[in-house]
Image (cartoon, helix red, strand yellow):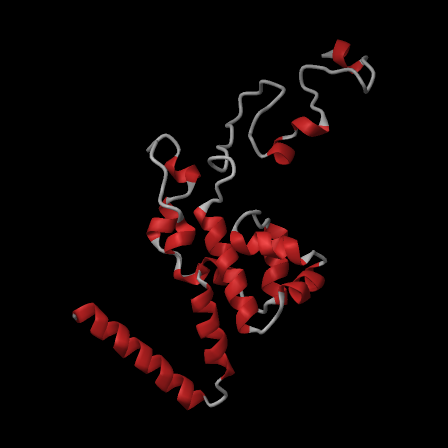
Length: 185
């Protein structure tokens, strides 16, 4: 141990790491030190968004749309480009904790909003939960999530343009009754 202290700052001791080998930087859980700590499981297959990231991104898009906010305006409020907002909304790029906090403030919702309406099937598709349990890939979430469809967002946008609260309530009741009749027949 005393010998290691005598080395220069540029020397690599068995416990030294470079910035590129940091667990937090790579997210892979690899460690240059060989320390006996648990290794994090990766996010899943490369190039395939995590279903939970897609859900959270869809909820960002939903709230932004409800507020009538453009991707450009949301990006400006967060100090991002609209392309980055698009990537978040598609689940292509993962939203970090501090960014999720910022989003909750700008979109005026609690952080829990982004996880609401997530069914157990989506939560169970997380590669971290599935690690070692199954080799089969889940169905692509984007294709089955109604919140990812343009039609849903257009419906929501039109719904909130109706100023009369009572009319909106009747529209909701009508949709519910139509959905209920489809379930029966």
